[in-house]
Each structure stands twice: as structure tokens, then as C-alpha cells.
Image 1 (cartoon, rainbow, N blue to C red):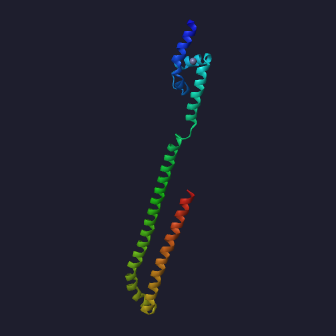
Image 2 (spheres, protein in one colour; image 1 turned 90 degrees about the horizontal axis):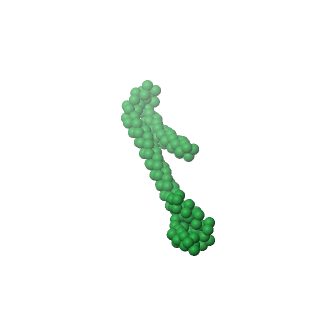
Image 3 (cartoon, rainbow, N blue to C red; image 1 turned 180 degrees about the vertical axis):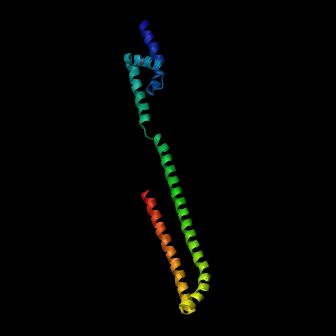
Length: 164
Ligand SMILES: [Zn+2]
């Protein structure tokens, strides 16, 4: 009778701990008490197993981990997209500057060539209009050449970007 009352008291005391035990949230002493009681009490055993299924199910559910991974992946994707955008922008600015610089050099060298052209024409004994045609061709070649060089540089940079 006394033994039965003790078990009944333990049963009532531990019932509330079963959910915590199933979630492994008890300290070692409490866990030991629960384990000992579970060996003797089928009712608590059944309830503990039910709680274990619930907490185990919660633990196994991938849902709580998905947002964290998704956030990380999304952030990484955004950052790489921004980096690519910045890289592309820097690349375009660089090519633009290069083209502008080459064009300026060509333009600036035009009067010099025109001045030298007259002497050149006298030296080579050809007409000034012939030299002007040469200068125009030089300008065109310089401009096209710069464009081709810039294009090749751009292709090479794009290729390097892909292989890295
Ligand atoms: Zn019990």
C-alpha cells in the first residue's frame, strides 16, 4: 500500500516532466528519475513515446533550418550579383576611358600631323591633299585599332572572369 502510494506520487510528479524528458531538456538527476519510472510505468512509457514522436518530429523537420540557409544563399547570390555588376561597371568605365583617351590622343596628334604633314609632303614631294588623306586614314586606323584592342581586352577579361 505504501509502496503503491510512493509509485503513484512519483507517477504524478514525473508526468509533467515527460515532455521535457522527451525533448532532452532535463538535468541528469531528473532524467535518471524519469528513466527509472518509465521502466515500471507503462502509462508514462506510452506518454513519453508520444512526446518523443512529437519532439523528434520537430527536430527532424527541415523547416527551421531552411530560412537560415535560404537567407545565406540569397545574400551570397545578391552579393555576387552586386560584385558582378560592379565589376561590369568598372570594366565599362575602363574601356570607355581607354577609348576616350586614345581618341583624344588621336585628335590631339591631328594638328601636329597636319603641321608635320606639310614638311613631310615637301620632303616626299607629294601633294598636301595626299598627306591629308593619309592623316584621315591614320585617324580612322587609330580609332578602329583602339576599338579592336578594347574589344579584345574586354573579351579576354570576360574569359578570365569565367574561368576563375
Ligand atoms: Zn507513471
